[in-house]
Length: 427
Ligand code: PMP
Image (cartoon, rainbow, N blue to C red; front, side):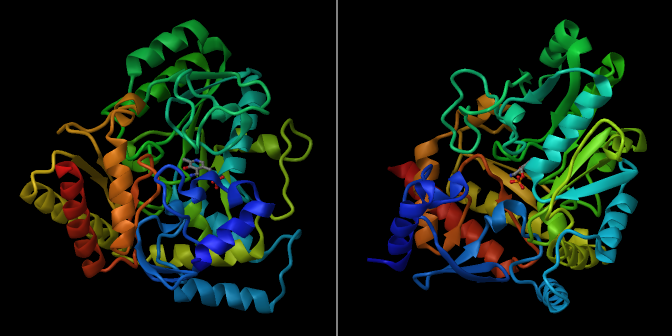
């Protein structure tokens, strides 16, 4: 029996499904889960000694490569000072300042421990500020596992990561199709005066990779202005991925509140929510909204986050990441053309996705996402693993490039991927 199978079987005895987060079962693609032994740069090694070039990259939390020396050193230095939590540190102030200074969308921010918590608190602020109950989210989007945001329309349940769930408090959520400004307007016309906030990902990264259509976010902003609702940008995945800061400047929108996670923690557990002073004031003592956390702003995360942001602040960093994205795009497109693969590749910066459906068009919403050929993806995922490449175990995750991916990694991946898909399509 392989080590991974033995450990997974033992984990199943004490952890539901053997995992602490559903995707780690790999149940959407089959095959046994990967049990991690170690990771360095773009490579991970499992407990059976198998090496993979990693394109899952900690679901986007790893942007500078695994075990990046500068980050590891910063964390070790911090550990020497003691694993203290529950009190403030200067490195917390420093990381907050870097983030606040990176964007005009944020006057102040607070750290929490996960993206889910950040979103949960942003929603709480919106409700308190507006004294309204309803939120609007877009179908297929994932914003963490806060009760309100696990709503999906009937018939769309069963997706392991974002299915409907028992055990949640009342939803109070309105659902709209991503990129459907017309439907959004209609919902606002009916419910606008009860909507506390609209929450949206700048780019949808939890249904593969779906770009916003021209004017989509501006339209949301306008409707929020017209009806007095808050506009929350969930930048848990996009934050610091395309530029040093959030993506609101690039898209030319000004959200009221922004949530961050993943990259800003340098690989350590993190979330942050921030926004305009008049909203952030609500979490100050004596005002309406409560939020706290034993591990919020903990020194391990703060030291890792500061080290990560210092690397990303260096001139040329984002140009380099964009060049990696471009290389992946040109390699994939060349190989797809060679093998006559009818699937569409979409990219922005170093983030990209493949729509496993026979169409030249970009996917626009979750109904497009659902039309993909899941069996082709499943088998592709499994064969790619055999070839030593780890992709996300779901069609609803993007391809996450990191600073550690070399030219050879990217070229090898694109070639292997095209060959594998071509084989699958011939079956
Ligand atoms: N928002 C978005 C856009 C996400 O992608 C995620 C997680 N993938 C979350 C929020 C939740 O973050 P966490 O897993 O850290 O709770």
